[in-house]
Amino acid sequence: MAHTGAANTKEPEATAQPDAHHCLMEELSQRVQATTTMDEGFKEIASAFTTLNVTIERITLVRNTERSEVTLNQDASGVRRDIEAQVAGLTITVTCINPMTPNVNASLQSLVTMAAIAAQQWTAATATLLAPVETSRMIGSSPQMRDLNIDIARAARSTHSVLIKGESGTGKTTAALMIHEQSPRADKPFVDLNCAALPEALLESELFGHEKGAFTGAGTTKKGLFETADGGTLLLDEIAEMKPELQAKLLTAIEQKKIRRLGSTKDIQCNVRIITASSRNLQTMIKEGTFREDLYYRIAVLEIQVAPLRERPSDFPALINSRLLHEQELTGRSTRFQIEASALKALAFYDWPGNIRQLQNIISRLTARVDDEKPITQTDVYSQLPHNNVEEGSLVLPAAARVLLANENLYSYVARVQLLVIEAATIAEGNHTHAAKRLGYRRSSLVGLKQKLLRSNHSGSALEPLAEIHLAPIAHQSKSSSAAA
Image (cartoon, rainbow, N blue to C red; front, top):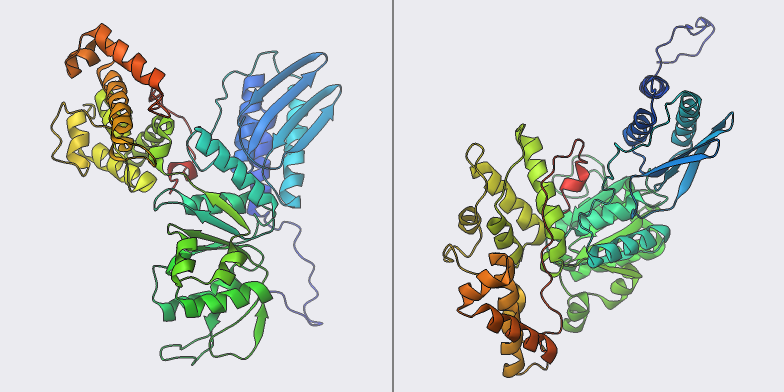
């Protein structure tokens, strides 16, 4: 503790201990300077930036007329900025994609300069050992996920309120966190509250805080989440569950940018960006009179839709692979979990009403029950999915087979389901020959029927084939990307 007064004039000791950040930077600098090859150098640069929570898009080295480049995050969203160092005709440029404080920026500039000095002695080798990493907390490369990442980046650049819509378990909270992390508020608090998790009286106190004695049990003064999130982002999840009376108070807080604690007469200014999320249709609730229309216009300046899992089947390989690796890491298992192709297809054809959260739960159950080095089988999968009455060997159809589309008559529906069955059987059995045998057709007859159905254009869009799933080990996996919900 510092003291003032004439008796305390002792000069500070010159041997004061350096802070933790200084020690960390010393260690990272030494590791970068110790590299002798381009591979080592690029890997140490990437590791140092990751340690400081900065995401790299690419690293480029130009030496004389030779240019070497490694891309770590080709499709990542965010505002690009370069950190560059030049030493004796050699240039290293590190392109980053997330905001950073001035102190971190200065530290990284120093690291890149150290790397440029060391790079003069690097052996001329192509950097091939760095593997692309997933920067998005959302796992998947389907068109829906690419569009979502674009929407998130667009929302991050804006200062307006955002409404994130989607079914339960799709990752709305994760999307909100990504918006915060890519925004200028990234170095400020991100606070989230599930409005369905608290009764109305407690919810009001959590949001706005209370003074001592404001109600029975209020023994001390408490800050609300608006104050806690000051300068940052406040996520109100399941906003539809908020009662109309509290909706009015929330509207006032958003419009006036100030709140008043329960039991207080003093207003408190709050600089908070509001993000809301809902699994219910707020427009329908407005018509029913259960959600305020004026509040909707305040919270939904920007709207983002998160697609349900059943609408992006091409993401299953990455999602299952990521979760199996996550479970391997949790259990300390030395070998990766194995899963049979039939089990993968059973997982892919389920309609997942609980979305990512449910998929993670099922994979966790399966890995907890697997014995020794045995693979996860189709029987294992069926034992954990809700439709336990499905016998082994049954063909599970996609959810689209259960829906009669708008303006679709019975003839068109039957034709569409026929095509879905053929494609599902072909995927499950591996080829048309085995699919034809499974469905009681000759191969030529089945192929002819499929072509006829495709030509008749009854299906609208064919069932998207599953991509191959490769369960390759990953050396370093981001913990944040293992939980998308």
